[in-house]
Amino acid sequence: MFTKNCCLSVVFILGMLNHGLFAAIVLQGVITDNGAEPVENALVELTDQEDTTRVFSDYTDQNGYYQIRVKETGIDAFDPGPPGDYRLYQNHPNPFNPSTVIGYELAKPASIRIEIFNVLGQKIKTLVDGFQSGLTGRVIWDATDDRGQGVPAGLYLYALVTKDARITKKMLLIDGGAGIAKALSPAVRTDMADPIVLKKSMSTRYLFKVSGKDIESYEQNLTLDNDRVLNISVIRTVTDVDGHIYRTVKIGDQWWMAENLKVTHYRNGDPIPRITDNADWIAVTTGAYCNYDNDKANVTTYGRLYNWYAVDDERGIAPDGWHVPTDAEWKQLERFLGLSRSEANDEGWRGSIGGGKLKQAEILYWKSPNTGATNESGFSALPGGYRLSVYGKFSSMGNYAYFWTASASDNDGAWSRSLNTHSSGIGRSYGSEHYGFSVRCVKDE
Image (cartoon, rainbow, N blue to C red; front, side):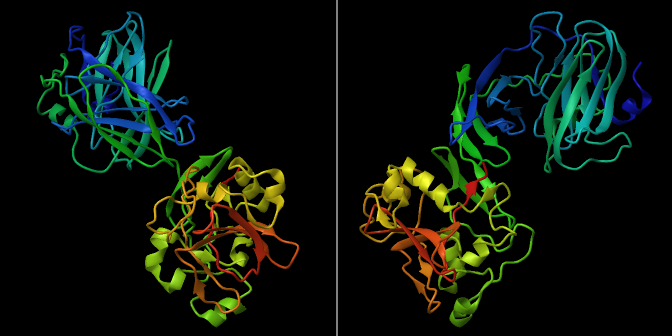
């Protein structure tokens, strides 16, 4: 017998299923990032463009692998497979709101539990707890806990537990419209001995989407009429304390931000002062930032300019898990781009191609001639200009890009890197801490 509290909050769909249900199309593949590394726990979704309530999904495993079985039924039909196995099927729909259907299959009659957990491993709900003689079943979770209270949107785990097996899968509760489970309420159907089949013909037009933590969402329209392998590369991102999201790129063995820093707070939440007055800029000896020409419109494209005191502050301006690169880390990047060891240690303009590999190639932001620009590295450097340390004025947007390092020099200043439109080399120089330069961050090892 099932527990009473289960009957109060969920609807059971139990009984033997017809093993002659419709065939499935299998879409599978591997999700990697722009560094060719597998992306784990990405949500892969396939939405029927003819009926957007039909969403099939899976989460990538540690190897970035996903597999989605597209079925004709509105609810993911059971695939019997070899006899004698315990199976827990992906809930449908997923993501869902306000309820979802969970299907399972037993190897033999057994005492079973189906439980819901949050991502901290705390049990939220017991859906089934008792002996089941039938070998298949379905149950609806209505996004409530054991007290009948609604739970917040987020990622949840559900588990099938028997004496011989424990199987766990993930599902995502979102805000939004009602799911298909409304059609399965007790007022509409109470016998639930047979599988619910919507008798919908198989669609061929789908929206394929990949989303997840620290990756840029990817979408693609897809025609799917046969089994298919679809491997996708997505772009890694990083988010700063203010919520700005930056694209990232792997260059050699280093992960770099592919956009200039925009943050206005240190990592602990303390504000970085914004200084607009020229005299105040050259006089300040603590961390500060500004927008080029004191115009916020420049921030979207070019990011912000910081004095070196902000870079050197122990509270940190880089996103969590990242840091402002040292002079040595810039040299590592430059050597990967083709500079020799001796060139990397020189001051002034060095090399003949490395800067071109860093600069965005289009003459959209860079003024002509943007010599040698290929952006082969994906660094996407833009000419954000700089703020002078003597007069506090702004200079050279469109012609120059300057970047701070985290390394002090031996000559009363700090090391920086520069690129310009008339050269394909990379400049290495030291200057006053009062300069306002752009900042790119590199990921912690």
